[in-house]
Amino acid sequence: MAQSARAIVIGGGIGGLAAAAALHRRGWHVTVLERAPSLEPVGAAISLAPNALRALDVLGVGDEIRDLAAWQGDGGLRTPGGRWLSRSNAEAAAARFGGPLVLLPRTALVDRLAALLPPGAVRTAAAATLADPGDGTRPARVTCGAEELQADLVVGADGINSRVRSVLFPAHPGPVHAGFTTWRVLIPVPGAEFASHETWGRGRIWGTHPLKDGRVYAYAAAMTPPGERAPDDEKAELRRRFGNWHDPIPAVIAAARPEDVLRHDVHHIAEPLPAYHLGRVALLGDAAHAMPPTLGQGGNQAVEDAVVLAHHSHDLAGYTAARLPRTSAIARQAVRVARLNMARSRAVVAVRNTAIAALSKAGPALFLRSFDGIADWRPPYASEQAHAGNR
Image (cartoon, rainbow, N blue to C red; front, side):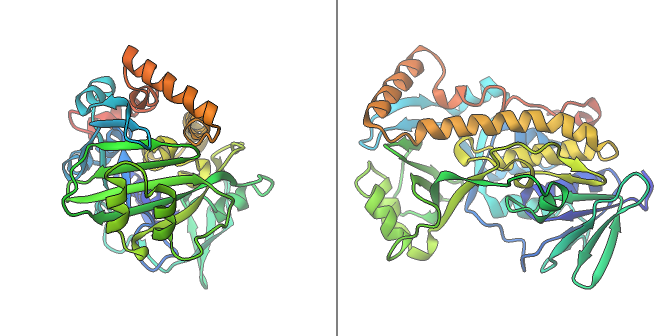
């Protein structure tokens, strides 16, 4: 790798920072351009499955993240009245996929990834535009304010509404509304003791998970039209929709302040892109394959993207070949799970719950089955495994 080889990463989220760290490890001179005034992430917490943890092992921080995280896996799936449909445990998850499922605040992951980069590599309040994707004979060009930068590689990690994607593939229809909205909180809940759980109702779901630092991460989703907002505040909206569900849901809602509640409509890329690269530019994370959060794999796939992109940094066609089929299949599965857990028909919900309970008695919980072929992913190249220690 020539010391002058330069990469520009547009977007300082989890995927962008992971890509920057992976490229830096391979000798690239990396600059991250983030339009926001800080790297503080939007969102409360993130679940990392063994696939993402193995990618983080490649970056040298997998064990550190495991130590920071609440070990997730004990718990299961419930009905709004509190009945357990399916139970799972951390030991079963680790045995099935070769590692744990963990949960931690997004800020903790962002901070660790940023710390892998040299001083000055990340520039905030730096809105960037792809001016020219370049090709085999000329570099890519990026403008940032009045400045023009050239790069041997540009990484578009600028999220679901990616401007980089729209430059590369202007005919692509872009993201579409998934039919529902989500709420998230990360708060202390005094006296709360409970097993991690996700609860499926009719057109509504709720999840509650304790974190290692003593706080509680909770999320909810409901079928709503895009753009709808509560007439008063989103805490009140949660109380209206979920206030009569089983404990500890009412206590979590009561402990939240209105300003603690984040609400976002869910969009996803329904039509896969023709490729994840063009010229000297590659897309990753939500910019390439935004998916519903129903498998908790959005951030996980971005971290996978990052280490695979670094491996194929001089062969972007190889990056597309490695990532597009896998992420497209996972995105389709996330859509199918959304149809299942957000079903609104009373008859469909009754059949769904009966089937889940029966399947879970006959074998591994549905929660674990849904990660087959996903959580068991490993970086597919021996040289990177050597960087990952004994993982």
